[in-house]
Length: 346
Image (cartoon, rainbow, N blue to C red; front, side, top):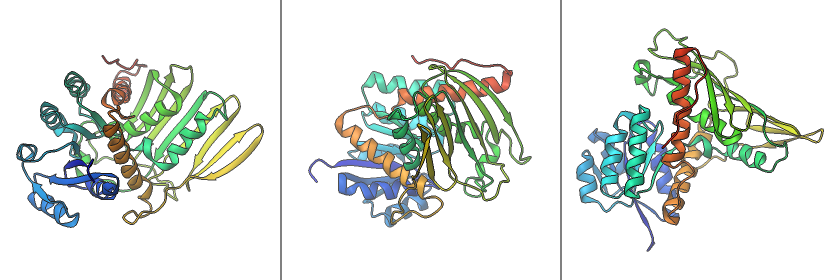
């Protein structure tokens, strides 16, 4: 394909397989995965072999020096993001970086400012926005069928053993708000608008975990709407809805509710209809992960299309900073016991 986009992936770990499958699927749409990189040679070599990627590296600098990369996809731990992003931006390489954007507000701002100064595409792989069920909720709200949303609840509660695949979670200084809340707080922005005030309570319910594993966040939105965003890895409810996000949105003319089982109930004009909003199974996805897995493909497709069109992605760095500001405000509120106004950028 003459207008192919040369893509390179950094990080070949736990979640990166979804990125690898996605970029290979997007070959039909012009994505050309030319190289992978991981500090673990075995992981990099195995990924290249399984996904028929021409070259693999253990040294990021060597890869960006040797390859003609159009679009870089960073799927590494957040403490590496700033270093990798700033090196890529310095070479003028359009870059996608996994969430969380960074460990700190200062790092996230620095990356955003560097990309803006250089005029380089930078976006965050915030994939909850691109989950098929949540796309359908957003589309439904945009029709105005329930009027302007005035109250909402977004809930992700599970007891699934997330530590088995990511044992480093035990030792994080900041845990569930930055890992999971960054997703659900972003969804609150999408559904209810920007946030002007945040109040948060956190809990550490698992004694083996160093930081918070449960959070309940109340948001006052600029529109006047109020939402409650709650999430935990310590739920004991059966059946466990993992990895589904539950949603309730109320407006003056009705309500939208997403319950376990990926069904959406829309009430308007005194009548209720039900819609199946589940994601399809792809050749490489499997239940119950399929919604999250497919969202990686949809996110990568959006990034590819945005890059090609020279448009900012929906989750461009500057937009994701607004979500990151809510995350930071949640931590500040939990520490102070008071409501906090999110920071602004610039």
